[in-house]
Image (cartoon, rainbow, N blue to C red):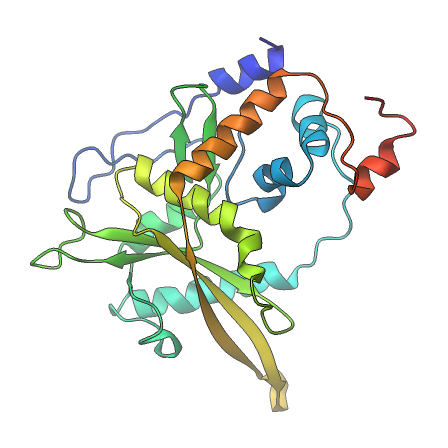
Length: 266
């Protein structure tokens, strides 16, 4: 086993005392392992599905795709949307533009959710088969309270909510680009004692109009996406297995592979 794989397999999350809500087997994690594959970063684990050579080079050789300037607007919007949702969470309601459009309530524990939003304390799962750790940051979380008394746990189901800011309308099928990411969120929830409901929601914020004093009107378009945690586990294990082997062949449609062919040989 290579030194890198050994490092991944030994990068175990250090768990603090369990965070008790209503069930004793629920644990939140406090550290983030190097060389794990975070579900919240589509460019990491989804890169394995896009181009195995680029993924292998990044994980095994620390040779990453060239990066341009990262736009700050989506990140700024993300923070503002979180604060907006948190205001409604505090009063036990959904934002009015989502009433009747999504089949969940907002997860009520803001303090715990904020921990899961941070890379330092994100939800994590150590795969017993490979020893590798999967970690990912949630934007938000919905709850379907199906118990007779509306209890948070017991028979409740959980639905990942992920904010997306776009400049234009969502194309038909465009949500499939995020399916692996959402599958991974489902896996993380399931392995942390919160059974997923079988779907997630992408919450698209699309600008429609700019008026006086810089006021911008957004349309909010929720897209329901069916998720499969077992598929996420299959992809994750495949990614870990790939790292153990030799460098994969160049992907025929990868522009980055073509760019690097002058000095990165198969």
